[in-house]
Image (cartoon, rainbow, N blue to C red; front, side, top):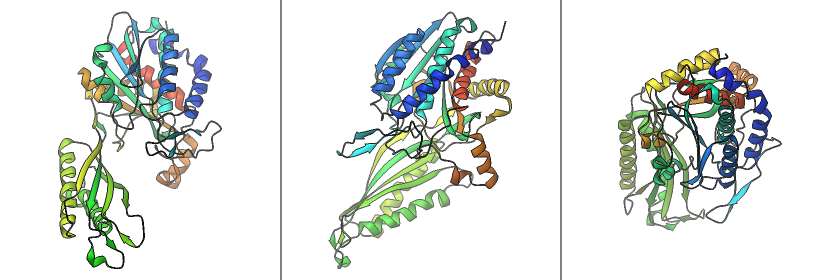
Length: 420
């Protein structure tokens, strides 16, 4: 009799076209965080058709499908569903033209610029294969479709809405993400994988004046410029070269006229770190630096520092990561890798932590292998390969989808398979 994985994957050719069609549909109809109603409804409909017990509207639009198949462990796998306020620039025939009205009343473009459409498609393809090959595995499969990962509130929203009381407690939780590596690539690592991320808004206070009489005011634009320079020394001069961290000032807003010194300037910045001690050190340094620059500028009051959102670090359980690594290498061979630290961030870990379950997270590639190889040979990967959140980010359909579906099956069967 064929091995459990072979029996599950035997159905892959038969669902490939459906998966590709679903992906194109999801890509063309992206939805922002906590508004994934169409995506969630599609996932729930398909899961029910495959025989899963489905619970909808957990948190906001969260969906969970449970398939009990005899005795054995319970494995939870998660896919995120939300898109981003990005205008697509891929030239694809199924490119998104979707827009929504923002909180400010302005029209916003919407795009699956992070690959969550890949995640949903792969999860549903995997769920279908597992349901049709029940003789190949034993246990309980939990497929979870999470809203609003990009806003860092989707996992918390599901937990706060009673997720841990509404679905079976998993023995292990798993998730994957498409990344700018060659399609076919699969990579996992022990320990730290994704960084913590803290987004801050800093309001700097000055004193308005006529542009021709700067001596009558305190210029918050100059203050903001000095803060940007000073903040960039935190990582370069206060952390050891072996301590990874990133600090980016992504937005500065001040004034409305070239001849008016405004009263305030607002900076928004993002901090990425991998451990709690470094996280505290950098965030404390941000506060110290902006306070000191405000004092040096004779600002009328201290800056206001507000936290906009916070992602936890993603730290893989060693034993879970080791089991995945062995399973991936057994199946994918040379396409299985130990992936490097990623400066991206995730809220997935809040779900297994709420259950008290160990977890691991891995990456799959989504870039055309020939395109990636040519860029690597030129030494221009950073310049030529679109990354997640870029208007040009568009994973190639194949072998990305086959790899993602297969990786989920390999991972789940490492616990649920008859020879696990």
